[in-house]
Image 1 (tube, protein in one colour):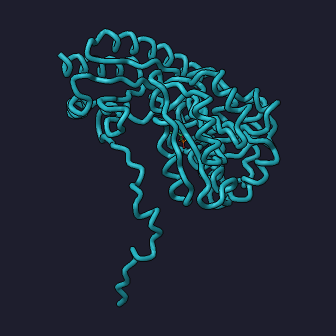
Image 2 (image 1 turned 135 degrees about the vertical axis):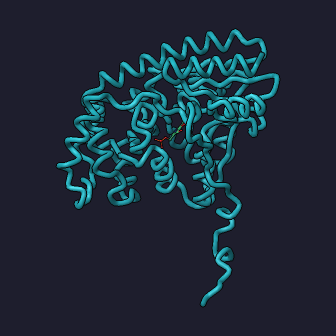
Length: 356
Ligand SMILES: Cc1ncc(COP(=O)(O)O)c(C=O)c1O
């Protein structure tokens, strides 16, 4: 019988990390994870059950995801050689760091922003550096560039729109960073379908740009499909670290179908955008809430009466939001994902009861 102290071999930067944690709710309304509240269309669900019988699940998936890349290329207007498919866009964030950063190298991102930039960097032994957003949750190019230069950052991640604040940063400030930064700018456009804004066109004139997208926010969170659009020569390098068969057959097939017949998804997106406006108007009526503008499928708000308490009361009543209060600049802040109209009504009902 061996009884070894296994922890002695775990790298210290891993031991000091906390695993990415998401609260869950067995029953109730989940407005905490920025998912699409609508299931895939009945037509797509039908096709999936038919196709499942034909997919050779005993065989490995297409390692190059050719059909899916063609569907992405057609939808987005880029060449297939520029595309890398990820098991969620999370995976591509990791690949970018692996390919471009030696140990100890700095990667940078705004604060507050998506937590996986920092977590992934620490896992890989890199130096994560953040730069503060201003009071409008916007970034300022000059001070950002100063920090990037000081730390000789190799990569800067810009969530556009930004999670968790919900807004798109000023185009002009981002443009300035793209033009002046001596490194790679990653535009993480996971929520692009809800903003309609993209930096993709800039890739034609600037080769220090990478754009990441995700299908998690528009209906396929359970299948884990993200993709990145890279300068082709960089895509070739990323392909070397990509795990073999990182995207499974079912995900590839369903994502291809979804992109090739996008109308049902676009209708869902339109409904979410309409509901975002309604929810924003309704939330703004509460005098104790400060509501921040959103270009995403979620809204950030601050409750001056105490966010933790509101979060707990809503959860007890079957409504799960994301509590961001542990972040120093997000004290009393909660994030609500836009649900279906009935889900949003129930959220507002419970909110009225909790706040009054
Ligand atoms: C800004 C941002 N980027 C990337 C991701 C990861 O998405 P995926 O599900 O494609 O890994 C998320 C998920 O919440 C996100 O908010």
